[in-house]
Length: 159
Picture 1 (tube, rainbow, N blue to C red):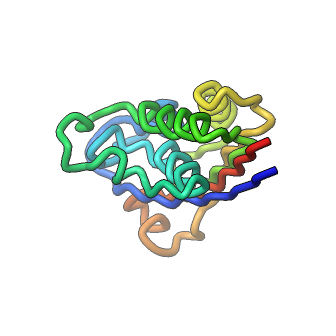
Picture 2: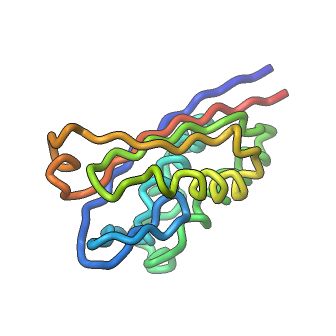
């Protein structure tokens, strides 16, 4: 059995807006996130974790931010591509663990819906997808409310 782990990390700065999209869920907030696509930092990080487990680069190599086709694109496109690539290479996603790092907005009230959306895209049971949050104790750019960071790990298996 071939077992692989990959990790992902991403950050996006806050900008003007009235909501942010995290793990495919629109969360009301007094700011938006800035990015070439929809700036879904959670989905970007999980996508990179899958690419990492496959040793296939990162999201920017598959979907260059210089390409106007991806301007404002929904990030589920990227995650679906990573999932399909894993399947094409003979891998199944075993589980994903995603941690959003921010002072606000509060993630807890939206975590179950985020898990459901991510599980649906990856065709996994919700018991194999973790979405959780932590703060940085008011330290650094996330602590000052300047943006959101995210880390994720994906475990892939080839039976």
